[in-house]
Image (cartoon, rainbow, N blue to C red; front, side, top):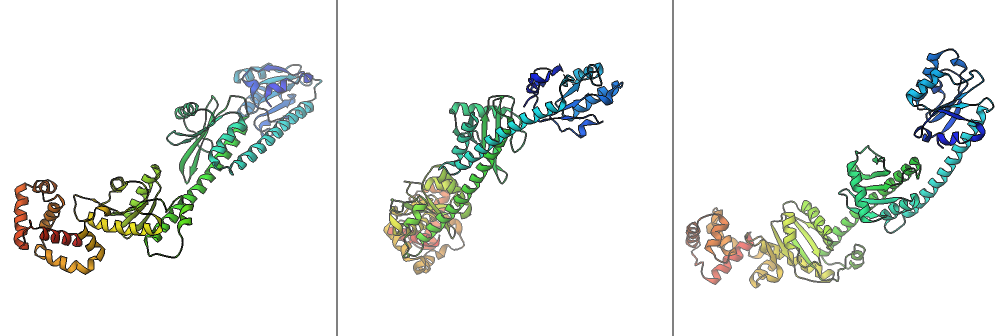
Amino acid sequence: MILDEVFGHREFGLRPLVSNAHTARRTVLGAHVVEAPNPSRWVPPQWVVLTTGIRLLGDEAAQRGLIAELAESGAVALGFGVRIVFEDVPPALLDEARRRDFPVFEVPEETPFREIVRAVDEAVLSQDLRAFRRSAVITDTLVRALGEPEPETALVGGLARLLHCGSSLHHTDGTAVFSSTSTVEATRRWRRLARVELTGPPVEVVDEDGLFATAVTVDGEVLFWVLLEVSRGSLAVPLILRALIMVGKLLEGVARVRAGEVTARRMAGQELLARLLGPASEDEPRDRARTLGIDLDEPARVLALSCAEPADALVTARQLLTVRRVPHLLTCVDDRLMVWSPSADLAEQLREATGAEAVGVGRESTGPDGVRTSGADAVLALARARLLPGEPIARYDELGLLEWLVLDSGVDRVAARAADVLAPLNGQEFLIETLRHYLGTSLSVPATARALHVHENSVRHRLERIRTLLGRDLRAAPVLAEIYLSLLLTS
């Protein structure tokens, strides 16, 4: 209840002597009769003190001191019984009360203090009971919201219905995830939040116009903001705070569960792709893939990326594909990042995002066996992509027959012969690099010079030296094919 409601009991004949519209709205939590010195020891804050002033008789300093003590301790008001010890409320006491804007009211002789205490107690208990019942309804409703398909929006929307107010859920950049009213209203709330100084958890902001906000944090990281816009005076502030804190805690729990589910799904996806790329097994992986939202019968390709830090590249690739809502599976095999996706062409996007040295793209395929085949294709194409610096992306569909034969047959079988072909160039890496660029630019001297940042005459001089060392005509097709494949196998 508030102080004005205490004055409203006309049967008591209470007469406010020092009061105004502001102090009349002070919250009252109880009333107590105190005649002993230092009444603040016996009366908690937000209580009304009742006295006949028996210890104040003839002592103006004590009269002023009583008001000073009560005002500083957080008491709501002083009720002074007259015509018992004092005929009227002492002037010094009233003067100090006016100076401190502290409410004082007169209690007539015929009104027992105990009746005022009883009335206040009944009103506070009744209010507490209503608040408790409403709090119980809020708790029950919000807990049930956890069972909804989208518990975040159900919680914030349910809070708006329970408190008859506007609510919204925001990402940390202000983007509205949900609003019980319009998006425009949600944006306006966020702008109000941005103008207010944050005060600290659990409720971060309470502004004078009825804006309440709390941050949803997990392990110190803010994930969301919940904003409430409540009409001033329509609800008790403690009830609003209790409900908002509960929603914040429940949202934190939902976020933790979701984070655990996401981590588990990611690990399951990595394990599934590693298994699909490995030796064939009798297990049927389609059902397991469906639980991850993956349809293995959808036409898709496997990409192999050569990365300095495959684990870091996997995180970057996942962020890119998740933001773009592209179905995918990711895993690391040795120094390669392997990606399965039905998206048409991700090679260039993934290479730029991860900083991959080279990318190999497998053929389009379907089914578990198709994933295995496309993965093997991607590894062959990656070997081709690593050969020539000017072509960091290679597609299995574009591999030449000789390239495919050599790569598919295995490097070990022909590596010795390839090493013999290039043996005269050993120790002269600048000549081998020149040869790689020369072949990678379709035998273009100007393009090779630009790639190596040298003069064209320097390229011609190097090519002549290569011809001399190898003793072969670089214009002959069989020679070019042999050198190209040797470079491929020794890259």
